[in-house]
Image (tube, helix red, strand yellow):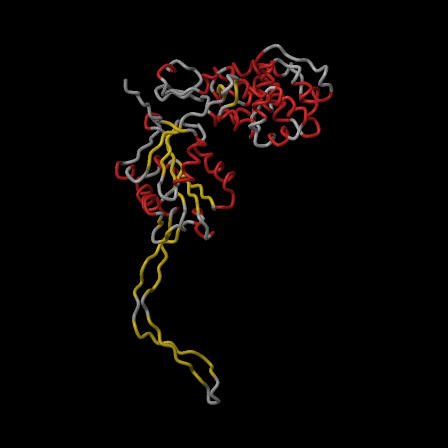
Amino acid sequence: MATKVKFGTEISLSEAANTIMAVGPEVCFMLEGEPGIGKSSLLKLMKEKYKDAYTYSYMDCTTLDLGDIAMPKVEKEGEEVQETEVKNKEGDIVGIRKKVVKEGMWVTHYAPNARFRLQDKKKVVIMLDEITKAPEPVKNMLLPLIQERRLGDVYLPEGSIVFATGNLTTDGVGDTLKAHARNRVTVVKVKKPRAFQTSASGDLEMGEWGLWAMNNGVAAEIIAWTKDYPQAMASYTDSSQGENPYIYHPQKQQLAFVSPRSLEKASAIVKNRNALGPDVTIATLAGTIGEAAARDLQAYTALADKLAGFDQIVADPKKAPIPDNPAAMCMIVFNCVMNVEKQNMDKVMDYITRMKKEAQALFALSIIKSTTKQALAMSNKKFTDFAVANQYLFG
């Protein structure tokens, strides 16, 4: 019986970044995905990985007009001038007399906008964000950049990369790209990142968005909430999510919805909830992630306010209270991962190893994938002893 092969139709944001950097000098990729999933953050991912190998240019195509791409400059070309020295009676040169012996022609060149960073004289990575929402004349003027790596009559340095982003046409937010333009790009769909996923050992570990959130200081309460409400990170393209009250739906009128972008904004509100007060907190959360998500998240913040704080944990790790509630354990784990430092790592390990095995596993799998805390953990004897004793977690 023949094996049926199912080809993947979506890639992750990190896979997209790696693909662009590997093949981008030859191919212009057009990344399509739902609103707010982090497409605009791709340039930051590339900068972090490749640093000074390139210079980087971000162009928000929704705000561009033709004059924002290149401006005309008029020059005379082909003119030949004969110069003759002018001398005084003593034979000293006192000037130069010029005579046009061949008339030139005035021509127009185009000077690229400085935002394209061509003046840096380095290979450049240019991100054409939301190109599908740009005015048609702007799209047309950018086509030589996509196809030939050329702006007017100025070519990009060899090895430069150009890529574009836009929303799915089914998102209903005005994204269009005509056939002749789409034929110049390789269109790839970017999937909505997950907050959590199951590890090879069967334990719960952080997904692409969860790791990003942890490494970028998103509130622990929000990260924990996405663990218990995985439907908040679901996609409307999944037919089973038609009644999901948290996510974006193109056919529904929504003031706000949950997305990676809106959760990052909600994090600032959650972190300042004590200063804002309960009424302002819930109102601003509802305006950021929608009312259903705001109400559910409010319950998490209320629970978090009753838990042992990080200072209490490191002050007395042997006696600081251990919660039984899975959501509470999750919040404490992420709070510890994000706040632990070299001087208190031993105390954090003393506390974590008092928790249930699933909380210990979540802590270990999270910190080992943290870009800012991994080295700290691997240099700590209590953590490495734990890792040796629990090798199955890292299989």
